[in-house]
Image (tube, rainbow, N blue to C red; front, side, top):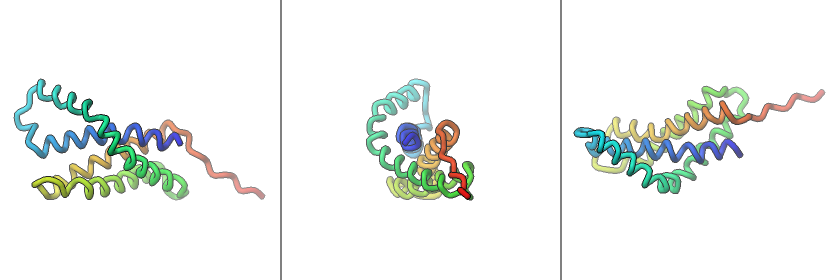
Length: 141
């Protein structure tokens, strides 16, 4: 249960911020930016945080379920599990977001893929580091 809570709290927060950064980069916002503009960016982030959680809650839980499934495969260690969960989230996010807007190409595919990859890997690492994972039961003789 704690695993899903970590994914639900961290995923939409980090993913929403990265999505905002990606869309502002794609729109050309960073071409002429001052400190005041960066302040506006954070203001927009905190004003739209509720929508990040609204629309990112279920995808974060789905990625958490993939992490939970991979936890029970004995041959997959924690680092490989983090990478597999991140790769799965990368593919889902890039397929979901990269077809939007007038631009298309490898850069857009990678930027939107990172929106899924980074929160998934951070959440998986936090779960591995701070949540107690079940140990396999000893074989009875």
